[in-house]
Image 1 (tube, rainbow, N blue to C red):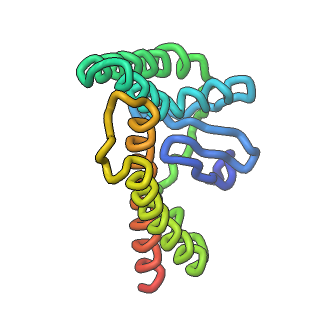
Image 2 (cartoon, rainbow, N blue to C red; image 1 turned 180 degrees about the horizontal axis):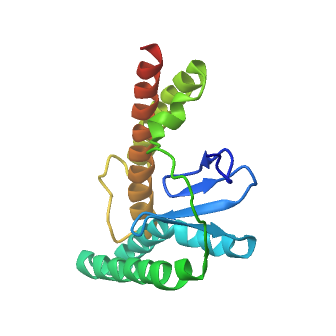
Length: 184
């Protein structure tokens, strides 16, 4: 039986696009798929970045309060986002009946579709970025001699650079694994 959705493109592990350029959200908790209409796309993009927003709030809260208070504020904000997303946003979406859920698509599978030269370049640049970030942070904090969590700029610099560096290392590892899989 031919699917009425056509070729499905994976955007991330819960968001897909069909051949008619419709965004489709897969709710992994209920195993149901929903169409995200044009008027709902801005709110979806905001809610899809809720983890990054919570991390940003945590970093800002760390500059004002202590660690336990910052964790509580961030956890409550994440809980509020999650409740709104599950109880108010998803029920307003139109269900996509008989949506053929693609196989589990990983970052490595997505990168495996790219050319080997592009993968190698991405891996090298992804390894270079954390090195440059470490050098920059060491220069700005004078080898952590004057580092203090009291200074919001320095705290944001260190925490932001750490998160970006770790994500960059993750991308580099995925690129190398995808390259090794292509060689086999």
